[in-house]
Length: 282
Image (cartoon, rainbow, N blue to C red):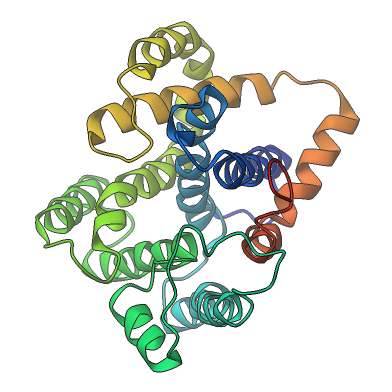
């Protein structure tokens, strides 16, 4: 069922995720050396982008009325145009004193060379929006293959797409990130689709999720070298966060996080040119 009313829990979860982005990047730019081993950094990276990706799949199901060419046009305007504009904006401000990104990405002096890099690696900077767009394209194709009412075929086709993506060579066009995040995006889609059936069980998953999170934390690497560990720790973290959020009764906290969640796209983009503001050199 498609719903149009905004879900505040989703906005609060987005707010938590975007706060994680801000703090994670502040630590990354401030510590420079061995930031991957910082415990706060590891906690943030265990859930923040998977949470964003899962919510993207969730909201695509909830708020998409029709998977037609207008759907793709809207997603292109919403996701790819900002990716292109901000990728070049960051390039042009890369030498400004308040920009902290240059230490981590070496930009070529030639705009033509930079354009070539963006063509082959469009996920080099604003990768999240680009990967979400690819996931939307895949589900657009998905909906052209089967009808919505065919439940079994629906899941089978998604699994087949995941297998095909997994088998793709991953040197260019963000394929490596798509291989990681398409299953999480798809999980969000199916959570939305079957949420009324599964929501009553989520509270019983807290203890197992805490156990899995603690067990996987020492094995987790922020550079995703083990997808199984990454999926276990991120999904368990998301379950824990969801249960906490749904039990928070402080209206001011919820309203503040929801406000950030509603502005998460703007915050995600703007922080890219202000990465030295925060912990460390800023």
